[in-house]
Image 1 (tube, rainbow, N blue to C red):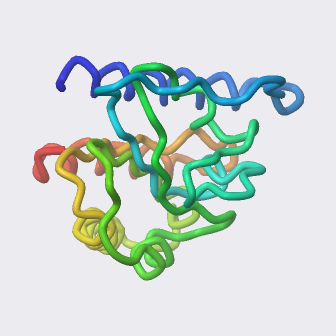
Image 2: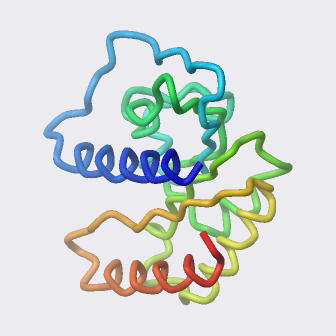
Length: 169
């Protein structure tokens, strides 16, 4: 499981990097690959970076502008989650209801909180998200760089590193 978790984390990082550098949104001309038996079941709770142009993300169907559509494959199945443009960690924690049927939960949150919400409150919201999701393995993504953040994102990501270690994520 640890090796697959590392692959998911690496795929998330690469996709975020590539999406951030793309001049125009990538397109996907074929359907998502079919997962094989025993594939890691991944769920995500996030904001616009995950929502992208998804019509039914909660139903497990990400759009081509969502990083999720590039992280799935025969060994990783996306089973849904929750994402919304402009969502704060508080909104995510309030909106996610009930458990997610997944092996791994990826949380990419804080972009819309940075500079406005205290780190400890963001951490409390992340804990609520993980508790509501009831998924055994949680991957907390760093927040992608934002040129206008004035260092707020760097500080938040440093907090996330310590926070995730404390949570055992």
